[in-house]
Image (tube, rainbow, N blue to C red; front, side, top):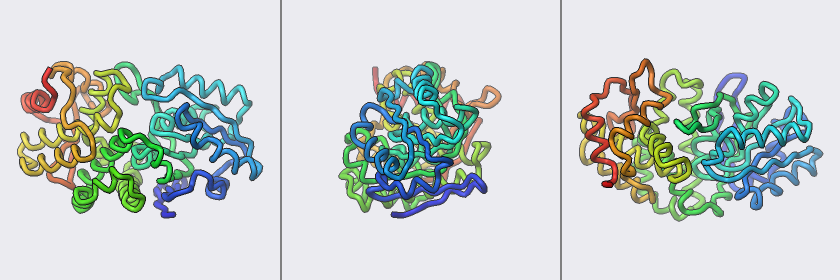
Length: 362
């Protein structure tokens, strides 16, 4: 087991990375406020891992409530959130109950938002079972649900007490979900670590094949990068926005197609290619660097072009992005591979050209 710590003063917490961690009650017990937990999972993950997590805790004297919600991005909404509240209230959970999210990013965001708001805030633990959740959504305290007009538009910052990233759980992950997680791993190299990006170019085939040693390294390095950024900018008032490379384009794709049609990582994959191409058109990246980005995204099994929504539709959807300030769209772009920046004065013509060039033909 390897451990990365998110340094947030009194809200600091460990991220344990390894195999066989889901059944390790000894890792969970020190982080409980009381011997009471509510485990939130979904209909796909629960049959695989819910009892593996719950039974060792119950053997140790913890009362474990089980709440299972439907699977999929389409259920990251008020109705499913209320199902979680129904479970918490129906089982008489109290302020010392720790909510444990067992699943991918949807479960983590949903359960985290429930924990942030139930009785005005209860403790929270993340047990991510997808690659994307392990390297991104489980770390940093962002929680929330979607709105038909935009992704993650309703939520709260609520840091977990602990993250258990069991790489062994990735063995049961569909290949499409592995690719979606690789998008966020590639993103971390692009924004912060050119050497890591080069490592990904050399080893992406091992990651696609789910080699444990390669996955553990990629998860740890991604978590280190995100933890360092979050520790400096917990509430996304500055550099934390860099973690959204490709996401403004990607969120537009998800909303435009209907949440769940493309996986989040698939939309981010195409979005990173769009961001790289826009960076080239603005005079930052070289054509050779854009091709490196496109090639790695494709080798990871991700789309390199957005769907044919039309330029105006893309622009309309992007206007709902959370990084919009004073009516101005703020985009995360690349100066070079390994160095990202935020720009709020992108010429409209260059942006439209990029959207036209990077979306699939109708």
